[in-house]
Length: 218
Image 1: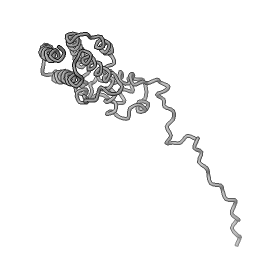
Image 2: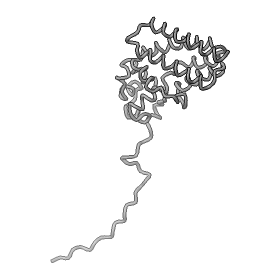
Image 3: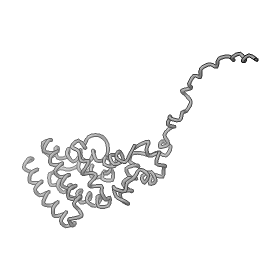
């Protein structure tokens, strides 16, 4: 009976090549090539919300608006919840002029007048973006003036302008919160009120706020 052939030389163990691409290694981000920015994502998301409302917002819809594939968008935001957070932080990019205006205020009456006109602008903005006011209301955390984004910046300049006008810091923050939350609540209730009721309610609210602010600064 023939003998088995002698074993060949033992094959050396394969040394992994850590420089070679693997199935689990993500290739360089394609978003670098297409130049997606946070502002661009926020603008695209707002465009989708304007068309179909917050309830209709999807990652795919935003990606299509940006002209990229959905996986590219996932390099920036992992899911819809994170996308909504990004929208909330950056929804007010178009109100940059209001930030400058608050920095130039000299009197409480000027602050009241600017807040009134801004509230009406925000009402129109929210009306054009169904569901956005409720989203902003849900994410109106006390620390939303911290960090980056147009929302944080706009909150900070409003509070800081009151402090410059002589309102103590804690009261300035309190009065801003009351004003912002009243406005959001009124817009969220828009289906049950008319434009005249909103404007009248705003004037009554601001008249009372003016009196309180003047008590603190005169």
